[in-house]
Length: 454
Ligand SMILES: Nc1nc2c(ncn2[C@@H]2O[C@H](COP(=O)(O)OP(=O)(O)O)[C@@H](O)[C@H]2O)c(=O)[nH]1
Ligand SMILES: [Mg+2]
Image: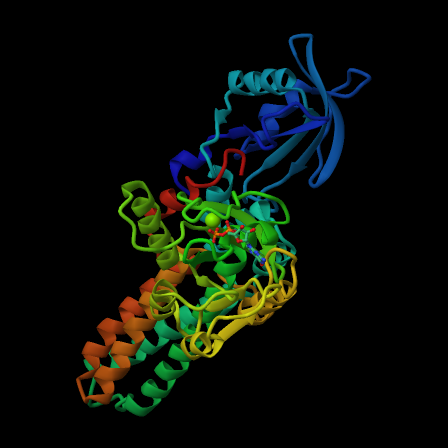
C-alpha cells in the first residue's frame, strides 16, 4: 500500500440536489477512530459501530448537533475499497450535507478525487478494470439491455474470461522463452504453440464481436436519413420520432441543417439525423448543408436512403443510389399512398434492403422497426457481459493483431524469439483491459473519468 493511501477520504456520493436522503462516503484506515468521537446514540451515550450494520447516530461536535444519520460501517478488507469505510446516510439537504462534510474535513479527512474510492478498490485488488467500467455503465444505463450487460460484467464472467486469456499468453511466452534459452533441453514448441495461439486468436475475435454489440447497446445506432429534396425525409424523421421535429414543406431545400434526435427503434437506442436534400445547387448555404449531410452519412452506422415513389427517378436519385447503395444501407421508397412511377427494380438492384412506405400516413413504417431489430439487435450475450468501452476494444484489437503476427511468424518458420516479442505485446495489451499490466498513469487516467464519490 502506498503512503498516500493511508489518508482518509470523504465525498458526497449522491447527486448535488436537495433530496430526502444524501450519502457521504468515507474511506481509509482509521475511519473508526475519526468517526466514533462524533457519533452519539439518542441517549447521548457514545455510539458503537459494527461491520456491515447500520446504526442510527447523532453526528455532533463539541455539543453542536449536525444531523441524525444512519451510519453503516464496513471493516477493511471487507468493504468496497478494501479499507475501513463508512457511509453516512444523512438528511439530503445541501446545507446539512455540506456542514457534515466540513466537520469531517476539520477532523482530518480529505476531499476525495473523482473516482478515488474505485481507484482504491482497484489498487487493493477488490475490483478489476472491467468491473470498474461496469459500475459506471450501470450508473449510466438508459435501457434494460445496458443494465443487464453492466450487471453481468459486475458478476465477473467477462473479467475471468479475459484474465484467463492473459494468463494463457503469459504461460505460452514462458514456454517459448524456455525453448529459446535452452533449445537442447526443451522440445521445440511449434505445433502446440501454434494451436494455442490460434485458439487465443479465436477467443479474442469472439470478445471483439461482443464488444461491437456492447458499444451498440451503450452508444446507440447512428442513422442518417439522406435523399434528394422533397422525397419526404423530414416527414419520415417526424414519423419515427412520433412528433413534429423537422419542418416539412413542399418547397424543395427546406431542411438545410442536420437535425439529430434520439429515439428507439427495434428496442435499440438510435440517433436519427435528418439531413439537407442532396442535389446540385448554387446556393452556398444549401451547399454547406449538403456537405454536412454527406459527412453525417459517412459517420452513421446505417443510412436510410429515401426516394419518392410517386415520380420517375431523377438523375439525382440515381446518383444517390450509386453513392449509398450497398448491402448494409436501407432504401426507402416513400409516398406509397400515391400512384407509383419510380423504377423500384433499379433501386433494388443497388440496395439489398428496400422497403415501401408512406411516411405521411404511416403505412409500412412498422417494417422499419422490424428491420432495425433484425439487422442490429444484439445477439443476447448479456448473460456473459460484453465490453462497452472503445479503449478496451482497441486494446483487445491490438492484442489480436500481435497474436496474428506471432502466428504468421511461426508459420513462416521464423525463430520463436520473434514470436515471443509479439506474444509479450499481446499479453500486455490484454492485461491492460483487466488491469494486470496497467501503468500508474493509465490508472489515474481511467479513474479520473469517474464522478466524485464513486
Ligand atoms: N403523399 C405523400 N406526400 C408525402 C409523403 N411524405 C412526404 N410527403 C410530402 O412531400 C413534401 C416534402 O416532404 P418533406 O418531408 O419536407 O421532404 P424532404 O425535403 O425530403 O425533407 C411535403 O409536402 C410532404 O407533405 C408521403 O408519404 N406521401
Ligand atoms: Mg427536409
